[in-house]
Each structure stands twice: as C-alpha cells, then as structure tokens.
Length: 365
Ligand code: NAP
Ligand code: F7E
Image 1 (cartoon, rainbow, N blue to C red):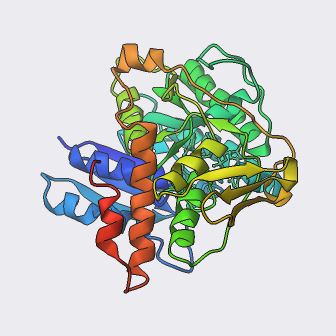
Image 2: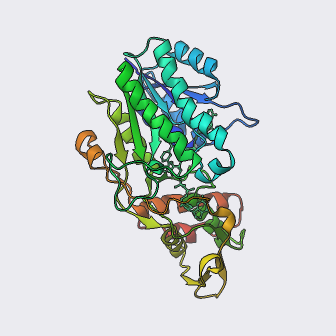
Image 3: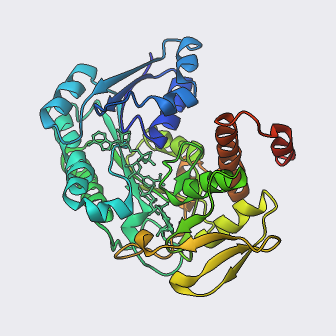
C-alpha cells in the first residue's frame, strides 16, 4: 500500500527535498501551497519531481491551495486527504524578518501548528495520522557548548518564540491525546534551493555574481555568528525516520561541526582563488582581495538583529543511536554544491562565459 503524506510548506527548500524523498519511496504526496501571483513551482522543477512520479509505482504529487492561518481550509483538506503522515514545514522562516512581522510569524509558526493538531483531533485521526513538527535550534538562544535534547530553551526572536509554542503544543498533543507527534529540532541546513536571503545562499550567490562582474561587493551583517550548517537533502531523511519509529519522540538533527559566517565567506571566495584579508573593526571592517586590493565585503548594520544568536552547535547522538541517522555531506561538499549551482545559474543567464574553466574548479568533487 502506498502511504499518503501531507506536506505544509511544500514550495520551500525542505518541502522540495522531502517531496523527492517521499516520491522515491512511492508515497502519494500532497502539499499545502499559498496562493501567490506566480506559480511558485521553481524548486519542484529544479528537483525534477515530475520524473519521480512518472518512474514510480503508484507515487503521486498534488498541491492544494491553503494557508496556515485558515483553520477551516486546513480541516477540510486533512479530512479529504486523511494522510498517514503530516510534515508541518510551513513557516515564516526568516529570523530577521520575524522582528518586522512578529504577529504574522506567531500566527503562522505558532498557531498554525496548533490548527493542524486540532484538526487531527477534531477529525478523530489521533491513531491514524502521524505528525512531524519542524522545530529549530533557534529555540536554544545563546547557550555555551553543544546543545542536546535536554538543553533548556531560551528563544531570542519572535520566530523562535513562536516555534517554542509549536514545540510544546506538539509535545502536549502527544501526551494528552496520544497522537504520534514528533519534534525534529533541526540545526541550520542549506542547499542550492535555499532562499537567497539566508546567509549561506546570499554568500554563494553573491560570490558567483562578483566573479562574473555582475556585483561589486557582498554586504553583510554579523560575520562572527557561528552556525552548525548541514545539507537539507540529508536532514529530510531524518524527518521521515522519526515518523517510522515505534514510539514518538523528539530528536536533534545536526552535523556537530561549527563554522563562522566569516569562514563561510573566506572558503567560498577561496574556491575561485580569491584570498580575503580583513581590515578594520565592527561596522568599518572590510574584506579585501589580497591580489587586487579590491574591497569585496562590507558590513551594513541593516542586517544586524535586535537580539542575535551567536553560536549554535548540535549534538545529534540520540538521532544517530535510535534513528541510525547521520549527515552525509561535509561542510566543503555543501559549499561546493551551492557555489556550483550559483555559478551555473549566473552563467546560464549570460551566454558568453568560459564554462569549462569554471567546471574545472570542481573536477575533484
Ligand atoms: P522555507 O524555504 O522558507 O519554506 C517555508 C515554506 O512555508 C514555504 O513553502 C512557504 O510558502 C510556506 N509558508 C509560509 N507561510 C505560510 C502560510 N501562511 N501558509 C502556508 N504556507 C506558508 O523554509 P525551509 O528552510 O524549507 O524550512 C522548513 C521548515 O523548517 C520551516 O518551518 C523552518 O522554520 C524550519 N526550520 C528550518 C531550518 C533550516 O535551516 N532550513 C532549520 C530548522 C527549522 P511560500 O513558498 O509561499 O513562501
Ligand atoms: O543567519 C548572520 C545572522 O538568516 C545565520 C532559518 O532557517 O536557521 C535559519 O535561521 C547567521 C545569523 O539563518 C547576514 O545574523 C550575517 O547569525 O542564514 P540565517 P538563521 O537566522 O540561523 C534556523 C535554524 C531556522 O530555524 C531558521 O528558519 O548569519 N548573518 N550577515 C546574516 N544573515 C543573513 N540572513 N543575512 C546577512 O547578511
């Protein structure tokens, strides 16, 4: 029997990778999609999801209009689909933006989760529908050392505060109503499909543009922030594994390796033989290319957050032990995958690039 899954946030980065994985497993995939003035199918197209449907045994892919703020629509959709598994990935997922749109972020990320869990209960699906909640390392705020499932939460943004409500609502519905509900506490995960205003994609995309002369410099916020960055393709595997266990529980997914934004910038430029040296301090700091003396990086306080999370590094030994999950991509693989994609995109938008020279940079990968 083919399983049926409903993915909220199907048009996002994780929604695309999760869809591909579930289609490979012959799931019937349904997705909740916001109405928008454009079709918003880019990520599904980039991963060629349609090919996985046509080459499979009973898999299907269908999107449905809906919104996390529309209770009746969510109830109606879940009633119609009666999914075996719901993956709640929909969110206003940008931490900086959550300071500009706190109420909306609370409504979608916090109450949206409650709406889905209430729908499961109202429709009497407690024993039929398993639930995955996209929880986040942002819950931890600023703590010293590695974070594990026992580390106390101390959110530092409207985004994280809304996700805290969603986290505990998921735990509560598991305990109160016996719903198979799990929190995946995921540390940062990136890919060529990452939104362009998240720091990693902003860097790889801008470096590609600088390289081809389409951009003068990269303008950044706090480059001393440190994150545990993994690849989204690895992380969606952990989400699925959580819902295949005998008992529902909460798990961290992380690489356990930490790097600064500064290091991400240096490594990305180095892939194209630009060596960066830093001069100045604070907002006056600049990243200069050693050979040409050109300023390639500047700081703009517009990208600072009212409250910053300085350091995140996860301990995913519980997921390794019980789910047999571990990330496959290294930090270097991640940068190469993202930069290669962005170089190709910029190149495709300009016909006269020396493509072989660029491809040779990645021959060993
Ligand atoms: P993303 O690319 O920003 O995708 C978010 C998705 O949510 C998009 O499909 C978006 O639709 C949808 N959405 C936003 N508001 C909605 C609403 N009101 N109703 C319905 N759909 C709505 O985020 P992601 O990186 O894939 O992350 C997936 C989930 O994991 C999010 O909940 C995020 O908070 C969480 N998370 C992410 C990370 C990470 O590092 N990526 C780490 C921990 C947790 P549109 O395409 O229409 O905007
Ligand atoms: O920032 C710093 C910024 O926006 C990372 C979301 O997926 O992961 C993501 O949240 C760091 C921060 O991701 C710029 O201040 C410096 O310290 O890429 P980001 P995030 O805030 O960590 C978590 C786990 C989620 O759950 C979220 O949904 O980079 N930074 N300069 C910058 N960040 C951005 N965006 N832009 C800059 O120019």
